[in-house]
Length: 328
Figure 1 (cartoon, one colour):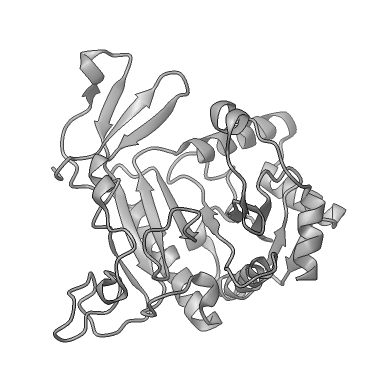
Figure 2 (cartoon, one colour):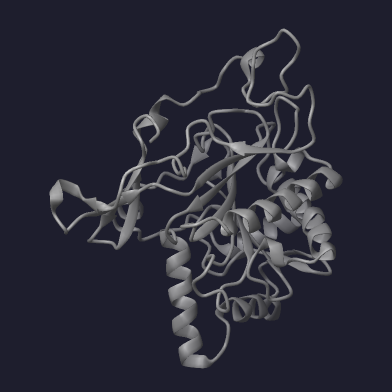
């Protein structure tokens, strides 16, 4: 078992599993430049997570994992009460280093390097999905101190969950209900509707469309969907992966120009994929990028109704967001 081994506990009020990982409170936070744990290890220098003197793209297990196959223990109950089931926080928490450069993000990569990262994402999705007990693989990148980033090095993460996380479960439930009522795929219908309207389309390519969803909740939000129905990254063809690298960099560049000023836009980018086993015929791959910045220097705080009731209030409209992104 890991020191302070993580555990997941079931919330009977919401039906969600909550991960308890107290050891992560001591994780590395904004170290000096000469102690970057994601940098290549220089001869005689600070020993980092990467022993090589240089690298293209690297994937390894997070030193402070929320989920890990080394979390021991057995399923049980909090206080022995069956109201609160528990299980070990098994799964996997990985770091994906996009570059050996000390600072940057996915958007600062070349198209060639971005394509390599996408290949790594697909490879790890396939491999992690084969691991016993893994139910869902989530690829994401956090950028900016406003998001809570603790390392400026260009990197993202991959979580292999021992359960289907709440948002994926909710989308799958809605897609299932829609299919029962209409016989159609909800994700495909959404993309087709966005194409028909056209007002929220940001960019298109041969294989992908970037758009602001009609019910966008964040001050800045873009979704990228493939034109072909695919469940996850491993299902993409080489041509679709090539095209994703190009259009995704285009969208990230527009996001960086969205607000005036030298500061890069803080964002969270996630790859929404079908669960490993459940509903793979219903779910459809798409990427989501959103920012908590509602204006230069002003954050969108999730206060009373958003945090307490999960009832969202938008400070703008999706059509305005899309119009601004097209002009960028």
